[in-house]
Length: 292
Image (tube, rainbow, N blue to C red; front, side, top):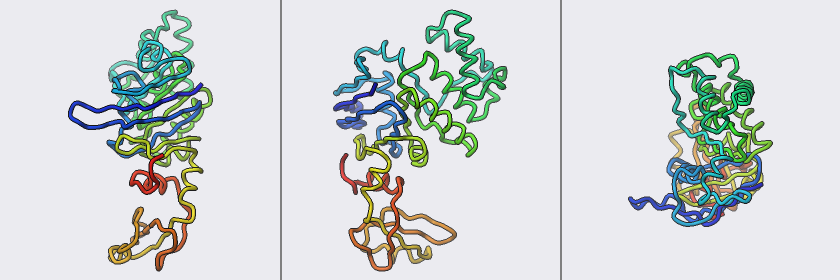
């Protein structure tokens, strides 16, 4: 099964063009959707989750017309938004049971078995009797995934899932998402390049509502092979060393600044450097790699 998006566009009443002719084919597994804030990622995710309408375009998941058959989509969908609204005074197991009823799991024994299994899978079994107001940020995100997995969805959308998590919780969440991606389409919408690099076999980069780049991580990185150069200078020398070169990024390290530039041949004083997915992301969002 795959998700096929063709010619999807959306303009808000205030004139903001949030989606511009978005066309993507997303196979089973982990798919990364990268882009800065305001790129259109959340608009695309809400459209796929049937929470808002598109102006033009089509979306199909297997035999389901996503834009017209919303009931069928919702039966096959798990959605974890960036902000998970939870009742702080309700215990985790009780709220998960409530969401399971809303998802259509009406048989009590079956519902109990499903909820218990999800609490184990998200490593929340030991906290099942805790009130949600006592949960850490990472625990709240894992509870959100438990809710999203109710009903065994074929399409799972997660929006900025690791924002604000500490390194240990981020690693736990990565492992959980990787496991889920073995049997479902999982769309990971984020601006954190490392999340996509660690988890996703395919990705797309969005900017200003359009797809700028798509493919496997190694493919998109390879587009910068032989074109990336680096020089590390004192902070006070940055302006002098960036004059006349196409600067892709600058990064402060140990009190000095690493300047990465794009050029077909080495600028004076610069050395070759292997490109990374972050370099490809910066190049795509700034228009240096062209439209996908």
